[in-house]
Amino acid sequence: MKILREFGQYIQMFKGMFRMPENRTMYWRQFMLQCNDIGIGSLGIICIISVFIGAVSAVQTAYQITSPLIPKTTIAQIVRDTVILEFAPTLSCIVLAGVVGSKIASELGNMRVSEQIDALEIMGINTKAYLILPKIIAGVITIPMLIILAMALGIWGGRLAGSATGIIDTSIFDNGLLMGFSGYNVFFALTKSFVFAFLITSIPCFYGYNVKGGALEIGHSSTRAVVVSCILLLLADYILSALLL
Amino acid sequence: MIEIKGLKKSFGEKVVLKEVNALMEPGKCNLIIGSSGSGKTVLMKCIVGLMHPTEGEVIYNGNNYVTMSLEEKKAIRKEIGMLFQGSALFDSQTVEQNVVFPLDMFTTDKYSVKKARVKEVLDRVNLNEDAYKKFPSEISGGMQKG
Image (cartoon, rainbow over all chains, first blue to last red; front, side, top):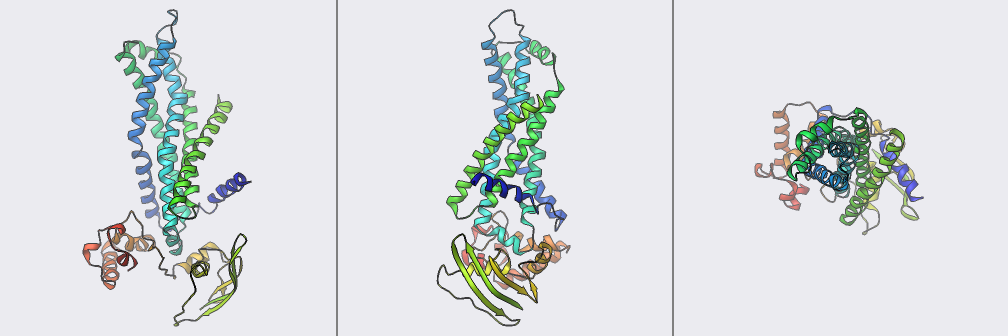
């Protein structure tokens, strides 16, 4: 019952969000601020995990391919496809659910508890449109960009690890990357990243905006936002894979 | 003029306000007094529209605020000022940015006009220019209330 009630409240959150802004410049400023917070703010962690994911993927793939009959270019192909299809969009978004999700939920929760949202309402500002919508739009725009970067860095990480450990020469790796490449995989990964971006921004917004209580409840809502985001993200990953692949 | 008729507010089983009636006439100062937890803040939030009453009416100049559309409510809310218990200042903005925020949102005045207005209102509460660039956490509770 509680899940259904929360789902209903989540859907209702979108009602009243799409209204004419009181001041376009202020909304634009808020949107750009969120793009900076979500996009630029997560750049470092995305770069680090992408390179290591690609590197680990290359080393472990090489470890499992023992037959001399399998060409070494296969390692590059496997790294490319696993990074593009799964590691870059899913793993990066799980990390982002923690980084961005907890930040959004605690920020909005603190604003709710300290009556800042009430103050905005009193001024006649549509708080859902001013506080939530820019976060969701900024997430949906910047997170797929981060995923594209994660794909590139992941493959580069695999290439780097392959040559550094002597598993595969860079020229063989580059040849492997071009073999049997399907553009649909990139389309699929980007479709996933748009869905994931929506989930990891809207769910924390919902939990943060509806916090009741004090500091303790902000912590609870932040944790809950991250947990629910991760679970729904994995569920969406499965559904999209079943539907689109 | 604000008229409150048969206002009731409950949270689940707990009834906080029951049959509250009041008339607030223009030019008069009204005081709401009650013991801790008696529902003063809930009443205020129902009057300004931050909470939806379970029953009853809040009438602003003959119009029922409870049943108004969001756009109609917004027009009335712009006329309301409220001092919150916890100051409700935006943590991420300086004192000056906090004061100029409604001007940025609702006016198209030039920066110099807004700055003059900020100076005027902050002078009125004895906050000098040193405090303008400070964040709410860097000033005292009394200054925040001001």
